[in-house]
Length: 366
Image 1: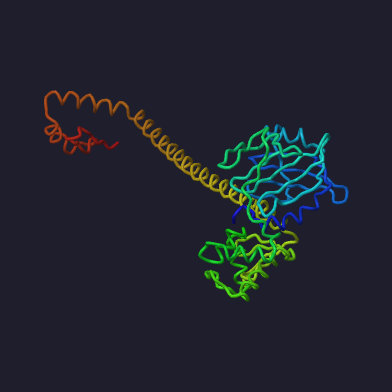
Image 2 (image 1 turned 180 degrees about the vertical axis):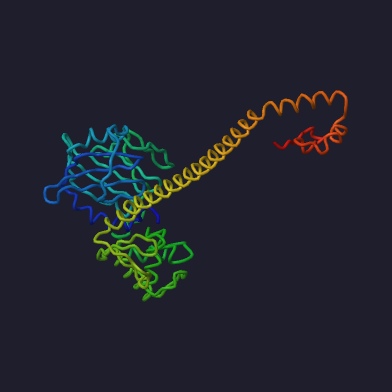
């Protein structure tokens, strides 16, 4: 599942986040470049907002954080501690959220960019950047401290388009299909553009349309901004409302869009991590068990070998005089005879049962 929000997703998420207006920041945390803002509001109690790369959402999950926060987190704490949210809005139809705080001395603007690799920037009232989380140099703008924040090149503010402007934009598009026009020129993205075509009963590959077809496209596109939130996960997609194009597919519904995102990106991830950790521990346990079994088997073998060697040693000690006498006689015989001759002479010996002339070994039977 993609961990990012489309412009439409943010449009609906912003509606749910309005509950934070008037909330005061209790604390700010950062871990692995993920920021967690804890708020308190008298009428609703505590709320926690998480911001990570290309997504943000309210979370119910409580986690532990390092005692000494990273530098940018420390900076945000210093400037925003006890500040209250005055307003919260999506910038036009961009993947940008502006949170305006009433701080001690003045208003401050926290800009949350949810495109590319994501970014956080704290600005003064006039949009002068106090400090960004990540300094960046783009072709058309620079993100760094003490310069005026410039929004990305303006995209079409689709929700605010008049009917006439909407239809003119379709007519002026140089895309080779309506689905691409809706996705790129209007900022709907692939999935929601296909939803418009499906709901309007339009072939998504078409480029030219009758007046009736254009009316249906306009109607379905405009309706995407006024849906009743019915958050669900369907076909591995996080959605703020039901899609007609997925009407026959199995869905899991949630009380809010925030809850759906939190469930998928936090709770499920934690479950997966715990499962992976359990598997890792079990795998490690199995490996240690195998090593222990191998070592136990080896020890048992060594103990058996030691016992056998001990018995051999005792046996040799008990028959030392006999064996010594045989060795003395053999050494004496080697000076006069070859091993082959010694073997012939020892045939039928009561104690020496075999002589291996090649390996120069003598087998005795005591």
